[in-house]
Length: 303
Image (cartoon, rainbow, N blue to C red; front, side):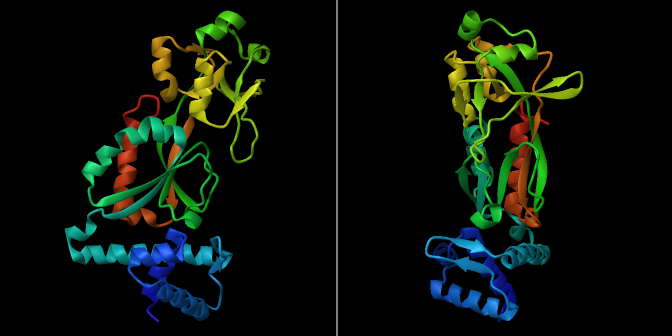
């Protein structure tokens, strides 16, 4: 058995999350991939993939073996590039990227043509979602995440810092008054942002004399989408905490008014996450550098 080839087939199946799609990209019959995995599992003495009619998932052994395969194949590729010349080091191939909705729509996608022009041999497959994707299970090369990182199996590279503002429309403030302190917010109507994963509302947090203070703000409207949250604030439905990059133009036009500026919300890191060893791939390396450039050019997102 060609072990390197078997590893490549296994990794491609995991990335595509499908035997059929992997076979198409490799230009091989699906039966050949099935036989390769069957032989590989027999050789290793363990089951790597759980297969049903609806989904494909890694077993615990499969997840561990996949991580090792990625590192080994990246090391092989790096060693070969040393001797195959500069052409081998050129970024090429398909890069699968996951982006949070608001950042994708407002910051990254309006400039995605720049990346396409700079690296014409790299094809991008971009998923836009606010859920916590499983990079290994879903065949994603990298994801952009906001906030404290939870998944220790991934490598995180901070590429920006998201700053927030507490704000409301002039119409809301004219009707309900302007809060002067954080505690005043308890008597106001908040637009609640809740987690699409846990369904729990997020507390609002503030930096007060160098310390972080959390506060639950009541509200009749709860939304799990950042852009929709701002839309409601513009209609005078309540006070919101929003990312500065989302509402900068509304603050400049006067459609929204910044509140409690002496006690700003806590900024959050913006990080690019990817599996161990994956940064050796030229296509991911140039995307990481480009996304860092994009965020650096945004005053409300740069580190």
